[in-house]
Image 1 (cartoon, rainbow, N blue to C red):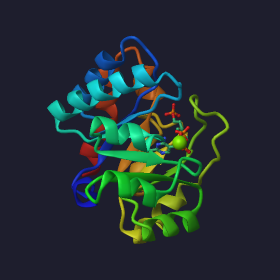
Image 2 (cartoon, protein in one colour):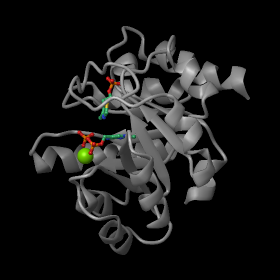
Image 3 (cartoon, helix red, strand yellow):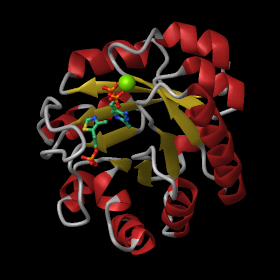
Image 4 (cartoon, rainbow, N blue to C red):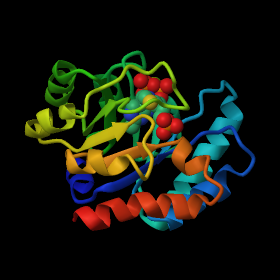
Length: 209
Ligand SMILES: Cc1ncc(COP(=O)(O)OP(=O)(O)O)c(N)n1
Ligand SMILES: Cc1ncsc1CCOP(=O)(O)O
Ligand SMILES: [Mg+2]
């Protein structure tokens, strides 16, 4: 799936639920040009999670946008998601590949570590996520990463995702440094006008391309 990801750049929306208007807000962000979606819900309510993830997958399919599940390989498999995102304590990349298959998108958190990025690239990751680049309202204690890491990781040849406190105002510096995707929660889902906020991120790539 890496090649499909390599054909695009843009906004990667990550959900901030649980919330009652989740589907509606995601639809607005997709209308604003989001190119990837991650369902991130840290609750343990498996029935709601499964229902929501399935509904989000259908919505993303209608927009031609890949849908990725955070943390949960089994949920990704059960609802036919396009992939999974794994952090350092979320299970092995090899296990995800064995469950989801060769065409799945398996994204990994590399935090601020080029060594971790090299290892996971060699192990078959489809994209490398770095951050937090700015103070994150969603995850205030996330380790910080320097912007140079985006340039330093270019040679690994995989799509690079930037995350952490990204706004339409500070995102341009990350796009310039080589971020293929800007992964955003609060600056999209916390906005009064979600579609307009997403469009501002989308526009950063129209200017760059
Ligand atoms: C695109 C992207 N990058 C990083 C993360 C963070 O993953 P992780 O460190 O596992 O933390 P949680 O999101 O699970 O709290 C991510 N989810 N997505
Ligand atoms: C999951 C995660 N990992 C590092 S920062 C972060 C949260 C990003 O959310 P926001 O865009 O609100 O800073
Ligand atoms: Mg995780």
